[in-house]
Length: 173
View: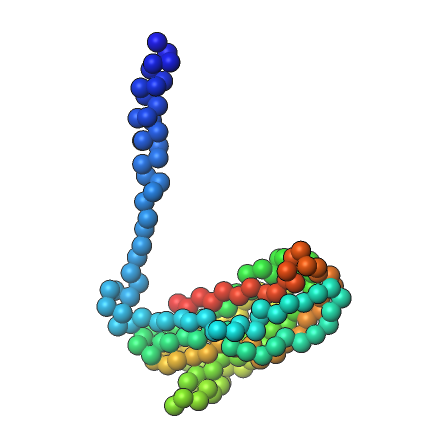
């Protein structure tokens, strides 16, 4: 009798418990018409994907990281670049400093970008210690975030951990 009760009630209980899980949620932040949308594109060759092996002192290669197209947006943008694997890198690097530059597209040429105050945005250091850098960028422009060099000292690394390159994440609000 007990076995029959379990066989009859189990499918109902399983249905009640599992029914809400396969629901997906999405939100349209551009109000559906993409008039005020900001687009972010990852550069084809990210220079942060360099391979480092143990007991190495070196320089970080220059190169583009992200392109931000805010030409359709009328609001200033807060851009934050995060070093997402800093905790892992700290165990293998004594230091890593990445010089981050922000450039604006001016008639097809990349120039040093200016902030909302009109002053040029200086190169900012992204390190294992700070883990993020932020910039307030004026609206209606196309921007480039790039690495303009840097340096590191890797104390130990091996083939098993893939050389431990920095992983970067860009947030645009």
